[in-house]
Length: 163
Image (cartoon, rainbow, N blue to C red):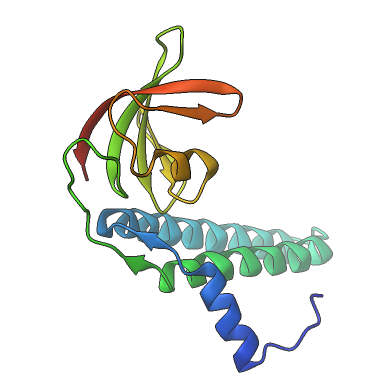
């Protein structure tokens, strides 16, 4: 599988598979994260090269690791480059891409989420992908509607704002 030739047709299919909708704010966040990861990778590769210069045997490890890093960064860069920026549809009390919501379980434990085109945690807020199982359930929902998060039923308690 890894030895397949990248034809223009295959590249077009890969771009289509990695195309993702996200808000402008999410794309800015992802751009910063991608820059940070590239800098970390460059620093790590430099440290490996320095260790090699000092006589430590790291060649095989360095070769494999650099290949993995190049592959992961390449996939992240492709997803970033092919992102489709969507304008936030600010429907009152309806969850759309870019909505921040609070969901709570039957015990009243609350979780803050932003529905967008990425997945990570920013402070106390989880940013979830709109194509994730929970993200898909949330789109179009209103206050008081219920969604399943794994095996837990959650109630939409707040729709704070659209970012």
